[in-house]
Amino acid sequence: MGKLTKSILVPVDFTEAATNAVRNAVELGEKLKTDVHLVNFIPPVRRKLQPSSNPIENISEELFSSINLLKENEEKLAELVKEMGRTDVEVHSEIKIDKLASGIRKQLKKKNIGLIVIGITGAHTIGDSFCNINQARELIKVDCPIMVCHNHEHTFKGKHKIVVSLDFDSLEQHKVEDLALLARKLSSKVYYIHVNHPDDKKQCTLNDIENYLEIHSLKAEAIELVSSAQKEMAIKAYADQLNADLIAINRFSKTSGYKECHAGQVMEETENPVFVY
Image 1 (cartoon, rainbow, N blue to C red):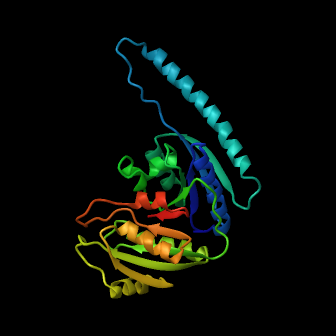
Image 2: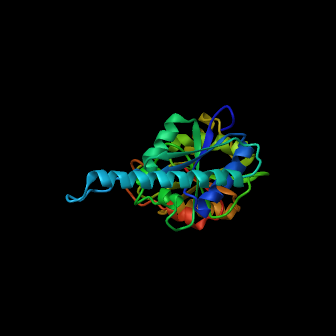
Image 3: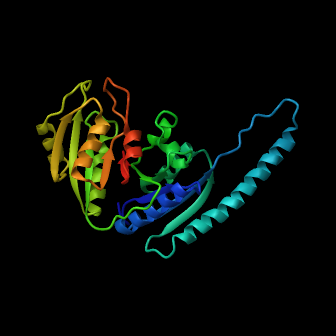
């Protein structure tokens, strides 16, 4: 990431979780020397008309409601940018009338986005919708790493320990290099872990990991190889053992015989930011 590479996107819904996500994104943007884009998505109204209703009146009512919401959210967005105060980060803000999933995909296509930052609370916020794998699979699978923050601010100054999971069966494994670059920019020590699941069609060896890191010119502070039926929780346990500042876990595997993913549980139980790729 960086000025010559990619920016940070923060979907906002004006909840406390989203506000803290913005603060974290700005803090991270200062460290990475990159821009931050705040986008509020207003869903288009698709109300079914009753046969006896007047279509013109319905359209007028919906249009009036959308215009009012647009004005209200413009004021909130301006106030949110103002709350950030003076910063070295260039903060862009806009409102889009679009569904969340399609709106974010369009942002990724139009802008040079390298990271999405969201905040979660366990309630019905934009961040929690984003992380709900069962209800919003299309959201969490956007082609971009996501930094998930709990409902408070974090600091990215100083050196960090980051645990990065390797899953050679993952659809998103190629993003490990992006996360390694991010870690270097955060002056982080990177610890790599691979978890062999009993149902994996290929059981990885330590030699496989070393070869992968060498091919991709990735330096490791340490390498961990374990076997577990709960991949994501094994990664969290390793991070807890190291007292790591950050965790980076992958989302889905493409050929494994098991379907359960506990990435959401890791996010919920980890106070520090979790990068999901």
